Length: 460
Image 1 (cartoon, helix red, strand yellow):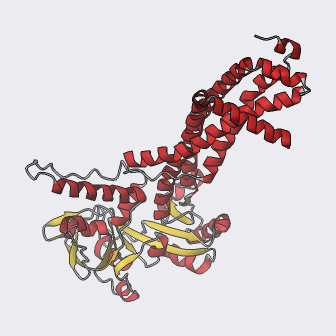
Image 2 (image 1 turned 180 degrees about the vertical axis):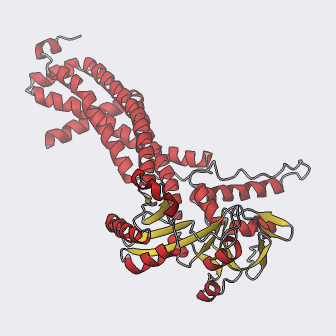
């Protein structure tokens, strides 16, 4: 133990005696460690943004019941395929105890919502049950949701997202006040509907930062010269924002009672104006992810009965989306990690080079040590310790630099997801730096331990 402490002290003295040279030697390790931590932080921020959108659309326990083409052996029954109907919904509610939420949806595509000369197209106009709140993780911030009375009497009432409010009544940024249009009448395809509720504003961390940045820039522009010609306002949309489409859809949603959708828009629609009582979607939530397979099998057995053995349906889970996110992040981490490791290897080569140079300068000193009884192993350990100390100090400095680097990245790109530094990333980077130091010192240590003491003492 005393020998190890003595070796560490000697190593620190050697580093301090050649401060500038030691710092240059550490640079490769510093850059490698800081790049590993910073890269991990940026990718963690991106991953959080992607998973935000996944959660916004209902979470991992949400399952979509979709229509599908009939299997080859059932193609002759295609004209008898019932599709998704309320019979499926009631059968699942009564018989599938592994499903905690069942949400039927009847959508109308291409609808136009208007008021006082302003109009917009919602992301979705859907007739729903109150179960949709839990299914899609909606939260009514103002007013209320539909009641059984609204559903039973097919009342012309609706609940809107803040995007619809912004388009028809004006956004808080435009009007400098929060408009709550509860009780106001809007027109859906020229039919009057009363707004009884409005959802909260949904936004990812990325969108929140974009909005705050826009507000900051707007204040700066207002305080600048008013003679500057104004530029036309434009909406860049949500396509360029990872995961932003999920929040955009939720903010531009219009929900009406399921019965109202059927009677007002679907009872006489289509190319031949014939009633269409098929549901657009049936969304399901399982009681727990551990029972997902059992719940899907239970639901399938029930649907095979209601569909008279015709398999015109399939289940879509969120597992594929999670796998895609994990695969993307894994590939990015491998690529970035390889680049960072190369930087660390270059740093290790620098350490090996400086240790070889140090041995050449200290041949007589090492010879004296061996002449007075120092063993080959003690000399070997001394060089390994010095190499490891250089690398470890470089790693510690690299960890500190990584925090500054992440801060600079957040300042230069404030509209991106906030990078997240994790303890795992720091530990991995520090461990790599230490391993590099040990490996870089092995060859110089072997060379130093094999010095002949007599030749070393005669070395000029």
